[in-house]
Length: 193
Ligand SMILES: [Zn+2]
Ligand SMILES: [Zn+2]
Image (tube, rainbow, N blue to C red; front, top):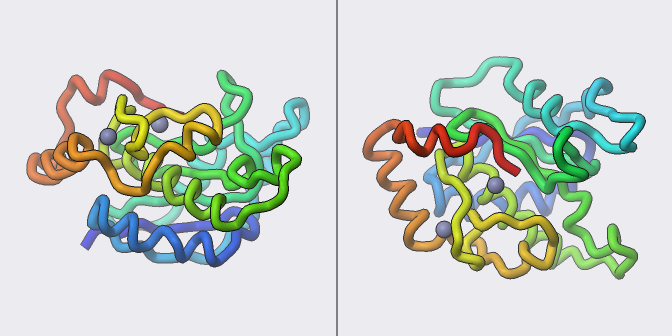
């Protein structure tokens, strides 16, 4: 049984962490296991940008024992960025082991609006399905309602459901049946927002 090992970097609402188990199982047949919370790595802090670098979190996740086939999901409440982008909702290794998702920009309170836990939960599930999808081998999808579509703003996340579209679902089945990705898919992106 392949597993998704979930590590929170700093405190994250247990309700959010609980919410992803069923959707992740339905989409990818991955059994979600919670791991102990870890501190946010000190070297992830970028003082100039006043944000945390998501690549340090990805690297930190990859250190430590795991079984072949296990995937790792880091979740954090701090705001994440990568050198090329002013922020990311998450980041993943394409057909790799690790993904991270930040809840920071999923809450309307980030934009000066009233907090909406129900909305944060929906957005979080969509983004987890998105980033875990990259580790499985999925690339961005043109279908706006599919979690694998690219979202650069929360308004785009709100158009997503939590279920993969038929095309992406078929790809997941193909990847599983083949046990590997095509070279073409691997060339298209080594890293994705
Ligand atoms: Zn899709
Ligand atoms: Zn993406």
